[in-house]
Image (cartoon, rainbow, N blue to C red; front, top):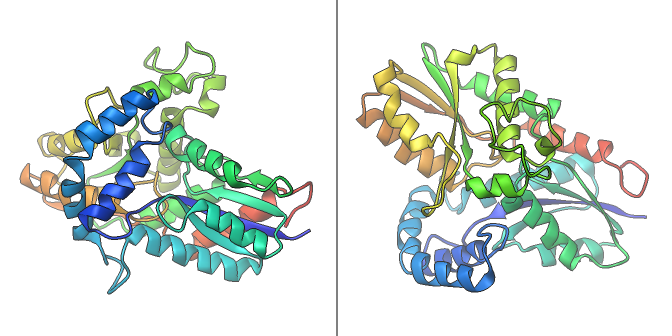
Length: 343
């Protein structure tokens, strides 16, 4: 029995050229887990209202962060994900590969590559701390769709409250807190409100009351919002930060549907009026720096904050390929069993 590890992240365009960005957005937005309407409506929305306009704007944003990790490194998300995979492979000394849910390297080729190496038991590590259909569910479904019948699959669960992940994340934040900072903003990728209520197995808990995320419920196992707030509370405890010194917000909304609030861009414009002049921002929903962290927060978000009266803005990098994060991933492979045995 040969074991292997498959890391899956969300994806990236092949380049920052408009055609490649358009191709990536088309694949991403046509996923029913991302835009959860029936196919004909999804096709009309994507082809008629998004793809004619969004690729130009997104390509310009990608161009701002392309090669941000160094000369000729290309997409930061792909660069850091590859670096993470390479270091984990060295650490484990078993077949370890990387795939992207959208774009390249694709999941089918990654699974086939492991099988060609004789792997019969795959441990899938979806690189998203919190559960969401648009990240974990779609990635798991895509792997299962191409998995040969004779290959066993084990899956690392959402690790939003995992001790190792939290310790590694808290250390990175602590290492980047400047002297004299006023406030820590934890900005997470947003979700449409409908994604939260649809994922609620009870049908009557999520977003029903103001305390739904703190009132115990089976819904929390699949509730992205609960898991976001749980991650944030546990990080604050590790950092010794009082509730008035940190906030949670949601970024990257798209379209006119109601999305989780508060919205990061609106929060950033309000801080200066509340006396926050020296802001630190971390993005714990992402394990690798990407467009949403580097451009949306580190550039556009910084500009918003400074324009509206802020003085200093510190963006905390993601875990990327930090040694502590590699150790967390390595520990996952011993904790989560493959065919009844541990690696």
